Image (cartoon, rainbow, N blue to C red; front, side, top):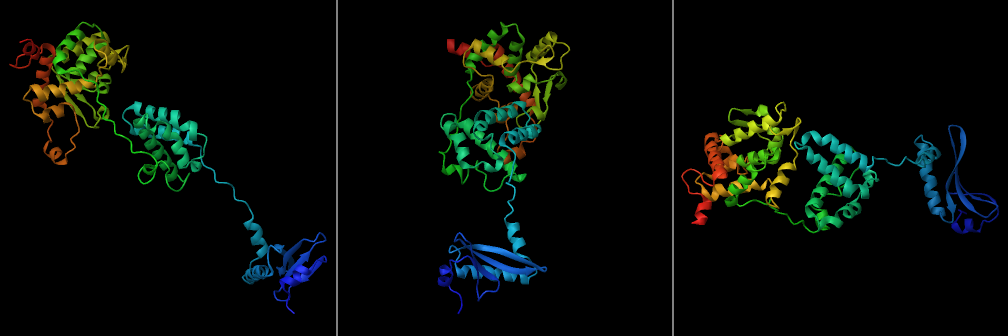
Length: 400
């Protein structure tokens, strides 16, 4: 009679019980009463035994199936016991770099693509302040959505702009990690289709730089003339040419030829070379600044080093609290629009603004240098006197 589960369950005497149906299948009963399935076979002239599991956890039916599978393996020329033992070998756990080291290395590698050195410093500052305390100690493949939320949620509504930039930076770092096969799967810092479902949409900040009303500018310039210092010269030069702070602070004497200042694209926000026609007062300022540090390569420097980025800002705020240097560009633009007949495109070209309209950009191929020269001369006259051309001073109109 074929063996049944009932037969094997009743077999409590220690020993080996053979299954008559499946060749090589045995039930071993130990003196302790524990029962185990054993598959015995010959491979390469060696008598071997392979455990198929305990009884009754592994039923007779399942044991027979496992024995048949083992026999099929033998028929294919492979040893089932060898393969079973190989499957038990624990593969070493996947290791990837820690986020802290990888993130800082990534920023260092990407520095050459950022024109402004401060950009990389901002990356480092936000990553160190907000990300490293939460995920700095984690391996790259361990980082998931909950950790990203732990970083962003505390600052998402209070400093939204910083939080939004931080999210984008983490996303790029983790994307680089995926490219290098340090992690796989979805990027947990991705906004579209992921974090947008978990965080409120960031409110775009349209914070404007505090600007001086153009009617007040001539009086402001007069106060600058009372400050006999390098920062006063640099600030007046910046205002007269509607320039950005970085363009002026890192400006070099070699960039000025006669009355034309050519700023290389590497220092321009749009990445394109920009020419600035200099008025007579600007040339006078450069001569005065050169006398203060004759051997320096920079337009405005002390002991060979460029003027500090805070120097002009602090001077402006001593004269009128709350002002920003960048705001004088808005002052210039308002004056052009409200008090002159100079065209908007000339003003935009003077400000070195990027043309977003592709059609307009295609037609505006020249740099409008001569028209800009006239505009900047009129602006310089207004800054010094409150008048320009044959127009009556705004200050006089108000008194009248």
